[in-house]
Length: 476
Image (cartoon, rainbow, N blue to C red; front, side, top):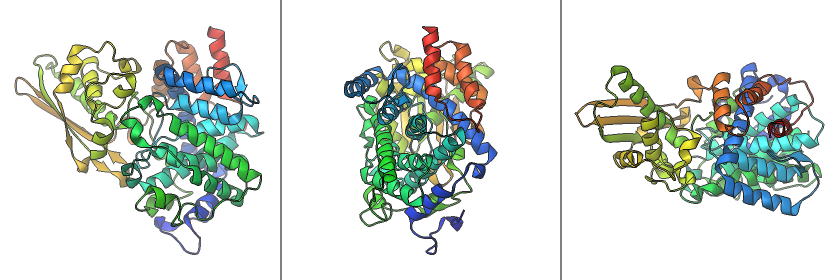
């Protein structure tokens, strides 16, 4: 592959869109390192765990969206989780993305500040059901999607977020357009037109982290629809706008004040960003995770030293980067499960008293008084030094002050689930069991993870969604 050195534009190679589309067209399964193939399998398992959680947690929004899809009907082409019938590819991808993002337990990337699997996997899996492709083709398409999303959205941050846009939807449309075009076997011109048409339709506001959080999955869901329509149109010869990313009227101009070319093009084709993306242990906004990990470490140290419970907490000081406070620092006493996902104060108070923060903790209707009292004792302090987007760091420093004067502090710069703290297959089994609790038994939950782990890449693609649905029917 012809690549760009050190992330700088090479005028001999061409514009942003051309370089990215050339990469997508040339990428082959053999170009994916073994550890990236393994990582992709883990992210597939995590996608289904997150989907179970989203199905359980976001019931009202799920029900409304599914009713709309059923109302309009259409040709049965692809599977929707938890549904016996098949639906049009576009509708299946849309609904599966709604589930995957419904509990905020889906994967993401710190540099791009968004989620990827919810839209890219939903779009690619639904499209693959219709096409005659192998798992190799699917893995390549997925990694094309992750590269497009993390590089384009990452290059536009933080101004994309500061302007009020949700990268999961804004960048997700382009990622889905690229990945679906690749899966369909389009040439570089076809991929370019799919990407261009997707860029034109990009949408999604981040206001959903302030209120109406249950509607948040609409953004990745719309991204799947945009990507599938764009790739299908490009396959039929539609020619879209040139320079959709870099034009003075293009995507970057609309959504960002600047372009970080190092993030956009650096290591393209050599460094695969799914390897730098994260998996989530807790059913809450990623901004809460370093805080939760720090509180749990403090709690464990106090238990080990015999100090836990010897004195009450006087104050909890949470030093954290500004965008975390902006997204998840304004709801102290959540009234709904949606609000609970976006409350640092609630998350760490719950983690302190329960020793975990799990799916069941999003049920705030029976909120213990002591959790609310501790949330009132929690103070968030903005500290920009705890964020370094260039190396993907977004951390927190938590200091607990006890009524007897004892102080203890922990700093977590990278939460569990990424980098050296990446989840292993046993972690994924635990997550699957927790997310699917009440729907399938432990043995079958482990079986889904094992199925993802042991995927035979050379085999013809078969929908794991349909396999899961069949499994659930046998347990009814």
